[in-house]
Image (cartoon, rainbow, N blue to C red):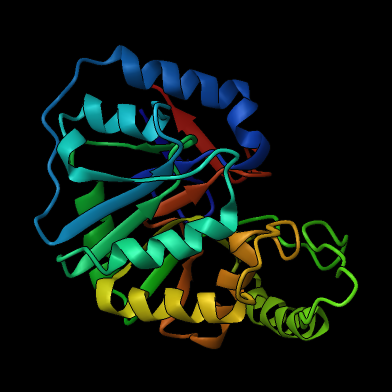
Length: 267
């Protein structure tokens, strides 16, 4: 079984059914097929640490994928409080990156991501090494937070010292930058924070900058697209050290895709 980006021709190592994509027949078929196969012995380079985040006692899709590959001991699961708070992802990711010893880190959402193939993470690392970047984020078709519709952008509460207007202005400039990917023939032009690979030391500093943007003590994840709004700001500031995987060489985000962009092959 594999997913293919039909526009670039790339067969993708890691697939993310974010948003409504996880509720489609296509995804249900893919998950069923994946776990109908016999477990195999997967491989992950000792240079890589794979991190996800989940509420304790929940067994997620990604954890089951690693179990299927006999790699459960190679997945670090950051415990999250319930209800899940996306801004907490930034704070905890920064903390856990400081504990990691490997040169490279792959970070993946837990509930809607599958790793395809026994050495999918190694494939991602090999593709990353061919880039002149410090971090590569997954790219998706829809934008979140959405400046056009206002979705994902909340309203300031009275007396709160937040610079929402400045953030929106900066995000608008980043959206112009992201349109470069459209000129390159890809509709996958917006950052998706649910899948990335980066150099560990660089990402510690990256997430520290994300934390510095968020006002101290602020926990309202609805203000600016949760973690993704702030991560998008920092990624835009750090371009071209931080780029998007607009050809799906490493990651494929299925949100708002159709059979024009994506093909699922069950074989």
